[in-house]
Length: 462
Image (cartoon, rainbow, N blue to C red; front, side):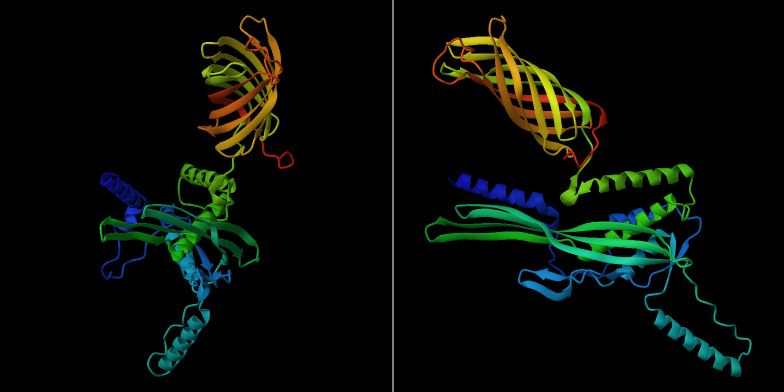
């Protein structure tokens, strides 16, 4: 009994440590010193960019929080904003890291102009008494491009969930919540006012909680109680920084692609950078909310083979599982609907009563529910004929079934499915008895081979 009890405790502890060991073993137990701010993956990508032929002078007046969102809590909202109000500073830092832009002060321009007026006034007085040849104050740089935009949305709790279990005072649970911010960035020509390029980036913010507890009487008048856990929240400021840096990265590459500016690098390196970005952008455009990646995957033609078992439901008792082999081909009318034909070789057996081999031909209409994802359920129904190996008995049948397919690659899929075959005869097992015709089931695993170009998406056919 105690062995099982401690085994449960060990299992929960292992689950706790494996799912969050990084946070669990780095708990803050001492006062930490100030440190340089963390970099994100987008920061490294910006610093690794090839240098520009000539940096672009840009002005950023205000990259503001346009969401109007306040920080959500369990009791409602607070008066603290949901996202940082320093997005302008984050953008300027990203522009500096890229080395592609020369940002000039525009957010607090009035302070700069006041200081320049003080300098002029001081130099004027100094020139009268000390140095009449004191040089004039140099002019301010002006921007060829203004960067506009901001944080346009903050969506809290776009997905929440959790998992927990408790048994005789021993249990654990986990919870998670995901928020999302969206950033738009546009480049505007100061000479013409034309919007040269607009980019859009989103970033999710993850919060997780994990806990385990124990409450149990181990002996008479001896109660053992223990509890542990942690909560981990992704900093919103880091999420905003990564989104802004990714927006700057996108702006640079799309500007290179549109010849707004140029990189000081070999043409092959620039082309490789642009192609990599195009591939990433294409993947992003085919990814819906909750990281569901939609892609035109299945081609119009495919062949398949299946192997599994068959089980009769006839007039004899004690049916047994026997072999079933199948080969066939599909033709897709659109990503959702196809027609397929197949040939089966199988055996039907009842223990010590009946055993015989059969052949069958089937023609089905099949519906694929999630054709643009790697894993998709499918359902089918159709008609066919079945005959024994000696071709002495032939009957028509109806069949229907369903299953699931997982695409290992764009050309190969693995399937698992089951079908129910309704024979329009009661003679398949050689006995006519009762009112119900004979039936049999197929359970199989299979491989699909797709060849040709993927079937294009068409919303009107959906």
